Length: 459
Image: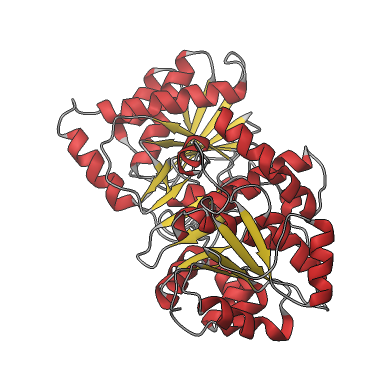
């Protein structure tokens, strides 16, 4: 599991570790990891030029000590001190190693190290930092811990900030590394272990081994009904494709049977495309809403009457007015969530973590907010972030496939939070396989789910 801790959690863990270590040892560990990451990005040391942008916090100290290590390896290191309170020990170490301090424009370095603001900083960058960054525009940046100016605990961007090619973080990931829009400013994130003993994280991201552990799989003499039956109430005469795609996601092999209930003409098309799909009957979970049109409310009520877990998507979301009488997963995109919460879409996109948590608490169920990094929240505020996928996944019908896939996992016995987060992970992994570096359509994603499952189980 990739865990993302808050600043308070990290500070507490650092305090406990500092009490057991010699003075300065923790910063030296961080600086060494940072220096090696910079060398890796540079590809060589001698003749390379690195500029350190240094503020007053410990991140500035990490940058200065890393700069001293780089200078001893033959890198030409300059430090632009943006605060009179820069770390004194780090400044002395850099000077002793042959680095130098500058006060004006630095020329053109090969790489910039962002040590401007530590993880305790609030709001966007000050004007002097913005001006300094402007002088090296276009030069790759390595951020220390998090890019300066981002919302570390929120994943928000509130004003000018650094956009990094690489972010080197220490001890644990922070929320900003996983949650957009801040995550988009982090570039590639490299984690340096500095020995922190951390509590349970409020934000986490499944890794392949976690998905393998959670995936329901048949064993022994299991029968199809024991593997779970999922029902799909989606599509309409106006949107028959939504039914086909929802069923394709549900029919990816993760449960024992799929039932389809809907318009007769649409049902005929579903059975032609998926002859294994049967009609109405007992189910262990329902998928409702995609392309449901005017009947989405009736279909949702019918599904809820069974008392089994329900995946609610698209048109059915407009009929959810409060906590539902059955376990549920709601799967809105930003616009749909904005309508559910009575805010503008831009507000949700600027603060997705806040709003997905608010929605989960308001509706008393798991809420999956679709996006580049999809968020899955529980009513208690725990969040999983999906980092699999490809930009090509932004295509019509992909959400219908996702709903069917999660519904199959619900029917197979996963709890809503696990079903939603595992389904989202597999959906992104399948899209990456299907795209193979190029474009795709939603049906390609459904066809690639079995391959994504195999790759996880084989690994």
